[in-house]
Length: 109
Image (tube, rainbow, N blue to C red; front, side):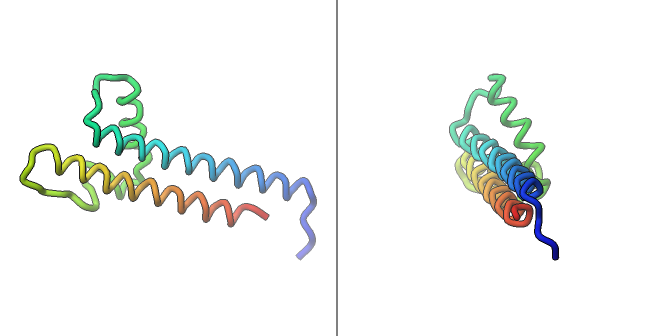
């Protein structure tokens, strides 16, 4: 295998950083959505709406709150929604971090 030029190595490093940052941003949005759900934030607020809508788009389809991986059924009203949100979005955030780290290792020279 021929040696990579310096420019190609720099470009791959830059792309790997961007991919990692995007995945970390997705994880941060999901963590923020889980926190806002746990705190029962005002859904009329535009920032809360934005984070909720964005988290619905980046939850990878497996961690969707409409059809969650784990749905908690407890006797106390409101608690099951908080647990379900924290569990599913928490795992989705960790998955995004793993995807980002693996992609970073694959792309980086």
